[in-house]
Image (tube, rainbow, N blue to C red):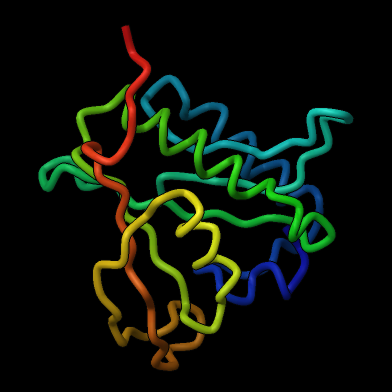
Length: 155
């Protein structure tokens, strides 16, 4: 993800090059065996990587994890992120003991908020916090999806 617009609201800076992106994806793959929850979003038709979604913060003692995601700009407004967040949310609630999943978005990033709303995440609160990259104060909206709000598919 080297597009500055994609990384604009993310906690990380754009990748310098494809080698850095490959290194990051490789580290996710190596960590799967230890319970890592990082996924590369790929187009079914071509297998092309177009984004990522991950449990960025894990709080098992408090019964939840927090998810974050990004998608290549040329694939915005196609429903891909809604599909990915729905699938990952179901996976997390089906295969972990978490009571809920939390996500947040910068209130200037309305599209990210719409994705969460389409996936039935509920508003929790707005909080002023420093941007991790710039230190500038931003308003973040916290949303949650509760286990009780979804149908689980585990036998």
